[in-house]
Length: 113
Length: 393
Image (cartoon, rainbow over all chains, first blue to last red; front, side, top):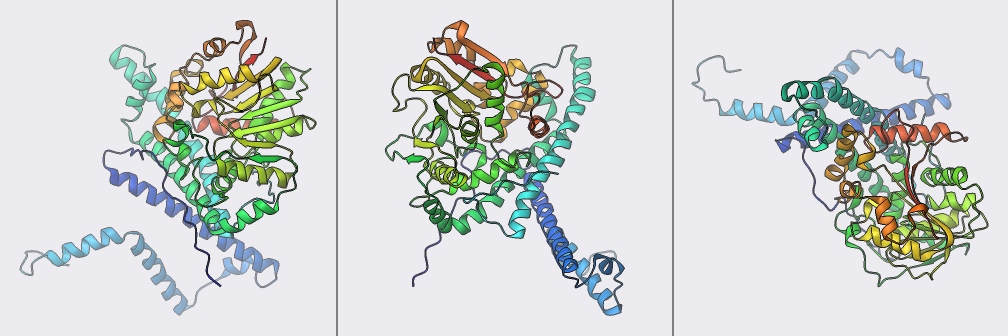
């Protein structure tokens, strides 16, 4: 059996894409933020759906989730998770910081942290 | 709480996340966009307008000047930027599931056939440039693209888009058609059309309202987009609506003189052109039998709304791929209609008052949302859709 060739639909609308800001970077940032918000809500809704399904099947209740207290291991892992996500969102700025750090000569004056 | 869209046999399936992406775009439009819109309105009336008038000693009442002043601030830029992004995310959320299911959707469109209505396509039809020049509403591929044999993608995308666009206020998505039937019932209570033509029908979502209101009528629906029509036909079959779809330009149809008792269009006019709209009205005049009625529903003209609303209106041209929007809104519609042969005493310009009826709350909510997004009539006014009506002598 041969795989049917997938039909690709266009994702870009023909016509000018107006930018609102003098610096188009702001438009791109705005689009990233709204997309991120959208995806965050989708994920949060999925989590909500999972909790409700589990509750309806008597696996656990939402109260269990609210009463959840992480033990030491879990708390450490969750802290890392928080940091990881923040780093992902701010990756570009962090990269710039890293570049700048590397560019600083060893004999530069001041505290080189 | 928005109403869920009425599901029918042609609907694209959605996973949890696909559905939520679409629902969330609807919510962003309904909640955030609305808040932004009322915020910028406040800003205009409370700060920008008084400051400008104090400084210049002249009224700020030209929509082009209003645009210039409004876009000096950050707020409006964010609002318009957000508006555009939400529109793009809407189509992104719609295109993915349709693309995934396209072969299955095409098969379903064939299985749906029960010979209630008909479908006639004209592969030789020259597509009007005003429909193909840009992808209207930023729908990728626009109204006319075909990506494969028997393609229905444009229609499948459009069906769920209408629901999101109306902020989920109407499960059946035939609200625009119902505004027309409610109006006709109020103004022409004797009207019993035997043959009806709906122009620029897309997927026939408004045509459905005419079928429901006049179940014995012979209902025809035309559009230039083949994928819209294929989908529309299958959708109508799935819903049990008898509609005869055909691929024709409203400027010059194949129907004989005096073929129709009622000709309708819904928000078609502003997608045409300065040349095409008068030609369409002429064609209506030819197609109506004596005493027949044409009614075209669109939004009010620029001179029918306040200057701030004019500015909000004309944003559509700038940001939503609506090349004819602003130009259309400056046409003298009564003159176009009388120039096409309708007698002056038989031409009516009127607005839907949208009063009463069991769907009143839904219609009001949808109009309010549309207003705050910059579409409908001024808030607080009783105006809904604007009609240009002609009665054949």
